[in-house]
Image 1: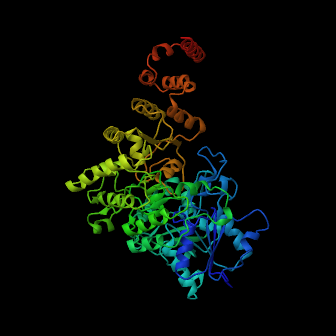
Image 2: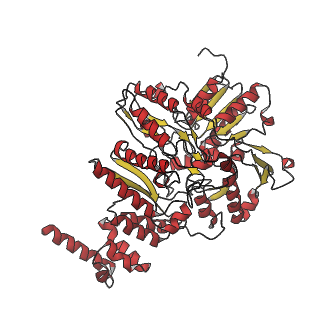
Image 3: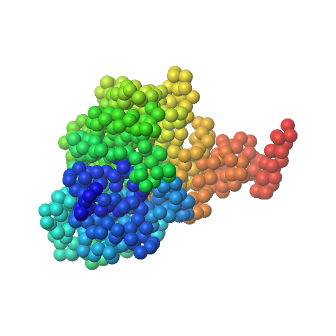
Length: 617
């Protein structure tokens, strides 16, 4: 580049892909568009003499550090805490290219080499660990990652606006220690900075870290406040005393305007991995190379999901023209064959959705606009979405556009008081199924039990049954043979073994052999994780059962696979143990009377004999 200095050097736990779906690329391009010189060091080696951290020298303004697109511990470990053998954000999927907690490891390496250079941390790992949080992999409550990393400032949520403000102020000569009031940032201050009032219109003081460690109910109470404030149009500044200092999390910025979000996505991304990876495959890139993000934010408020905690519940949508411009860039790519892999967002069908009266939204404290029932102020009009779908499909060079992001069928099916919106929503559902599914439509009912779904903040399973009828009818109408693929979670807080047994029966009756399933994994800053750790629901403080031991989890998970012969005798024994003999015949007709008085080995021998006899016939 011919530069004699660099303004900002970004370190990332991911391989570098210059694509608007990748956070490091967006932050780099946004800073570049503001006139700053930016360098990016992807996946630095932290196990040698730290030469990757020092090879570019010190930046003029600051170092930026992110663990990458995923929390590193989710990236590294399964729900059973087993080490994963691959990493989708690394060339050829190779594991081991980043440490556990890169936010901490990278920052400490930089602090050692450049003790006086400001360090800013951000990304999903830092964002969701900004206060005291339960770490499932360490099985302990930890304080803010800002303290563990020894960074100067932490950016939470989507970081374009705060990172630009940080760069601007440092360029103007302000010291990093003076940047204590920038929205959507977290800083560490002396105890004397605590506000006198613990609960005011502008500030709220949370229980201290030591109080949370001493009493889990304090941690639960903290989470409720954090979630409510982070989902407001404009929340309060939150404070938490920890280890002799006070963590100050400044209130968030209001939702992005359309002009702002367009400006971030209209930057000159190459949409390609860096040339250094030529000849290698980065699995995550294969998923998003021909995809388009249409909006940010999610108002679903699912209890186990971190999207609203990071992006907020208010939707910021790109303009139709901005989306079409990106589609044209994709059409011009050498490897494009005519198929857009995804026109989506955190939830695919929330594009352009908002309240009928925005002033009501600005004072709203609900963490979800859909649970327990959809908000009366919600305008669930899918017609802008249909308009974009059709405009993209009409571009020369587009054969078909698919919707790969998750679809909230409950949002599309919700009856509005406006008949024209209901008509548009029916059109959306049919067009989605008939024209934008690549053979398999993935949706997420998550469970079949009303009690479990209520904890999850998900709709009644009966709604999924209604959607399946619509799905099957549309397929017949258009002569299609597509599959509906439901996602389910086991061992979620509130879920008992009997709930999983009933899930097995319900899905069997719908002729599903499940494949998209998972054990619940507690990740920082979700309702479900707080319930898992504290044993109570953070909003009611009432006890919530959670399966925790490997034995308890396996006892739940096996019901996903009731149809496998090797699980049959074990499931029958388990149903007897929990007193649900009524479910045995529903899963395995004519088995309950035989199995009731037979020991397990005898049952297995009988099943083997029947199988051999069947094979002979």
